[in-house]
Length: 49
Picture 1 (cartoon, helix red, strand yellow):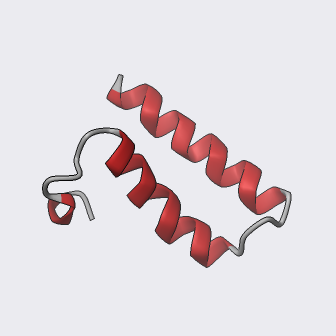
Picture 2: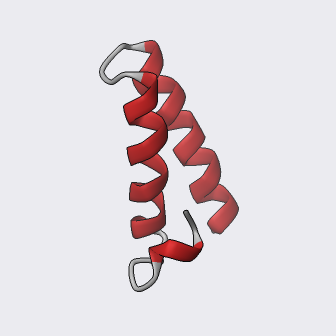
Picture 3: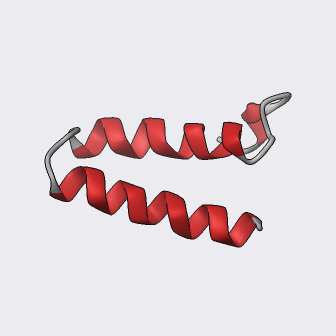
């Protein structure tokens, strides 16, 4: 499940940057954080970042 979430995060990152909906810097910061929150790491995201 965690690997699928990682691949989905990468796919969304590519989609967002290729369609120019967000800059690369914003996408590289926000999408992994959102992936960590969706994955259930909301109690301590500091270890993931």
